[in-house]
Structures are given as structure tokens and as C-alpha cells.
Image (tube, rainbow, N blue to C red; front, side):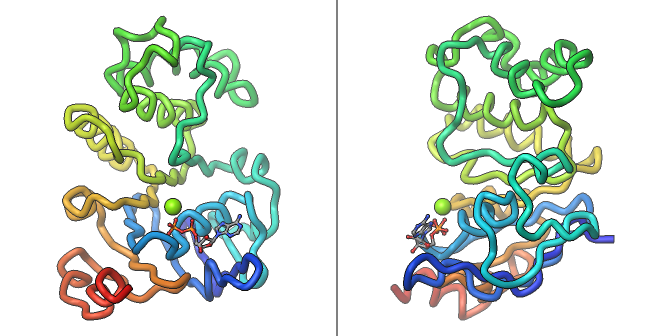
Length: 234
Ligand code: ADP
Ligand code: MG
């Protein structure tokens, strides 16, 4: 059974076909990278999967359940988590409180313990009681990921989660992703860092002008002329 299946999903904004007939299947425990030039439709794809936007046409299945057109909170509740390019923290709350706040709809009783586990996994124990606005940019990104982990999603969408993050914290994110994957979590990651894509992605999907123009392992897509075209042809 697949975790996620997109069947000919499209979405336009005005005259712009942001996502154009994308079909994609993601297997349990896979880490799939989404790459492509700016404006190629990557973030829109995440917004369609998480219900922020409705597709104009096509179908989206999560664990075989048709979630096309569902509201974001229902999709989140089913087990889809996502980070935003710009962290969405409560700046005046502590790291720990930000994690607890993410569990509001979830498991209240388990939340304090889970919050400490998540802080430990992300090496944020020492800033547990610091306000979010006192954290470095990289620590804020880790905390944003931590908020997602509070709900134990089956599928996690990461939108440029390591962009601008200190190399040491980047390693923390990578090892957390690997650890979660080994425990059965599935990932879809938008990334510009090709070294990271090469290291952690089992499979890569290349987008250009809203369409999937190539898919395969890193070596396969690196040898695909469409990929060079997508990056150099604009
Ligand atoms: P990427 O994440 O690959 O850089 P996006 O998905 O953000 O690309 O954008 C794809 C295209 O859709 C761009 O041309 C962008 O301007 C357009 N777009 C995305 N969201 C909206 C929106 N809410 N309203 C209008 N245009 C949008
Ligand atoms: Mg984007």
C-alpha cells in the first residue's frame, strides 16, 4: 500500500498553471526529494497535499483514503505533518511551550513527555526554557520540525528545512530524519541543497513549469538531459 498517491493533480492561479498534471506515488518509509527551479510548483504541490489549496482536477489519496478537497486540519489529523519555509512559532513562548501548543488537538496527557523526547532528539534540551525569539534561525527551524513531530505524523513534508541552517544543526536534522524514517515515517522533502538530496533521498522528483520532468535515483536524474534543461534553460 502506498502512503501517498497523486493522480493527475493540477492547480492554476489566474493564468499560471502552478501544478500541471502531477502523478506521484510514495511508498511507506521512503524519503522522496522534490527539486526544481524557483516557481516550478514545489510549494504549491505541498499546499495541495495538505489541503491549503484545492486541486482544480485530479485526486489525492493518503493511505488509500481519498482526501481530495479536505480541509487542512482534517488532513493533519489523519497523519500528515508539514514544516513551512518560514517557521510559524509563537515567538513569546518557550521552546517547550511551543511543543506543548502543537499537541493541543492531540494527546494532551502524553504531551509533556513527548515534548522532552522531541527536545532531546533535536538537541534542543539546553534551550528548553528559552523564548523562541531568543533562538538562532537554525534552532527555530529545528523547533518548527519539533512541532510537527509532536503529532507523530505518518507522512512529513519538509519545505527547505535546512536552508540557512548552521552545518551542525543541519546534521541534527538529517539524523533525526533518518531515525524517524527507520521507525517507519515517510518523507517528502523540497530541497535546494543537492548534497543533502544525494545523501538522504531514496528517489528524486524533478519539477519544471508545474510538471514532473524526471524521476529516479540521484545518479539517474543527474544523467537526465531534462534536468539540466530545467536548471539551465531559463
Ligand atoms: P516553487 O515552490 O517551486 O518555487 P511555487 O509553488 O511557490 O513554486 O509557485 C509556482 C507558481 O505558482 C509560481 O508562478 C507562483 O508565482 C504561483 N503561485 C503560487 N501560489 C500562488 C498564489 N497563492 N497566488 C498566485 N500565484 C501563485
Ligand atoms: Mg517554494
